[in-house]
Figure 1 (cartoon, rainbow, N blue to C red):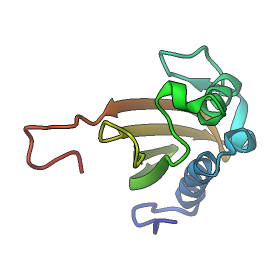
Figure 2: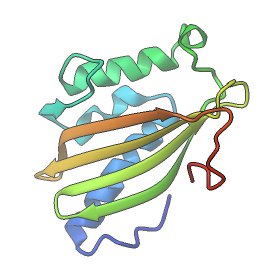
Figure 3: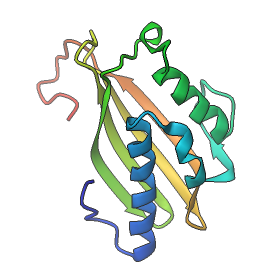
Figure 4: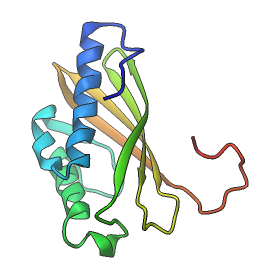
Length: 141
């Protein structure tokens, strides 16, 4: 687990740990086990899915399931946390998802969590597909 450098309060530290626990469960292929990290009425903002945390967790599980290769995902996908920021009830996590067999250079994601009472009450995610060839020498990280 990444050291929590910028979480100033004990509450922020707990919130960062909860957000990172979500990614641990996703990386372990157990996204539905993360349900208890979210409020029952958690609002999700993914424009490609119906609302609610159950729909989000089901879609992650489906991408990781036996049909994963048809969706572009493979069994050797790995998620790496690059940056974590905490500010009050908000936690932002910057992740990298890659596969050794992926033809692209993987996915870069930004996740924003809003906490209420120690649980994730709202969730946003933005995904970029990393281009195979980029004119930017600085790359995406």
